[in-house]
Length: 245
Image (tube, rainbow, N blue to C red; front, side, top):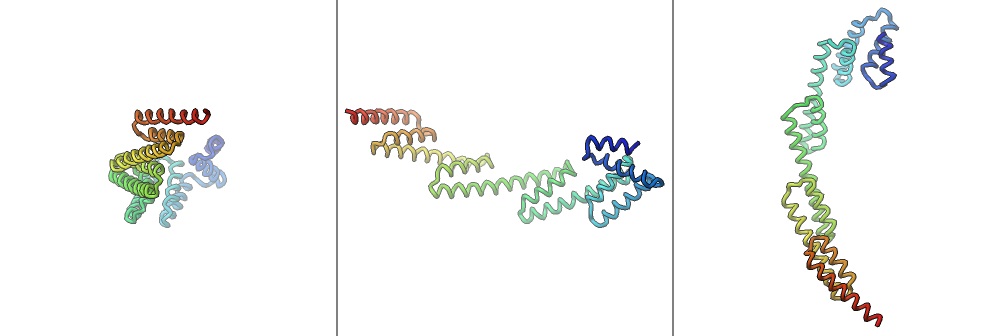
């Protein structure tokens, strides 16, 4: 009856571990008629403890969990599972601190997140994870800022501006980065404004208008730009009228 029920469950959800265990052990008992539930549990204890002695903790724990499937009230199996959980958590904690010491912050987080799956409430570890996450953000922010300054030194103003913005997204509270963004935006707007003036003086009115409009997009005074564009439009149409006269 147990095997039949387990097989029905497996037909619905083949990945259900408990049903797999029940079906396997019920089949084993049917095959070896004299094999009792207690004998199967004893065999699983032997397998689990043997795996534990060889340091194969995850496999060992899985065997103890199989015992609980067969007998949910088995306290000894529960104690073993808790013991192995603690040992696995301690090992991940140790590896995390080793990685942290070597400034491999990503690996430290990976190890400590594994601990949190076991110890869901560990305030000290949670605080350490928060510290490392901030360190990673600081490193990423510094790399991004370095890239932004390189672009700026190469005269790639717009790309530098975009990269500074990315740095600000990583650490929104950095006032110095925000200051760079504001200053660079003003510089870009000023460059477009000056380029417009240069084009205007060269009587390249369309080019002047295009540059002034870009200056406005980057924050240059809209009223000033509107007046300049209006004057350039007048000049442009005057030139066209002269050409057709």
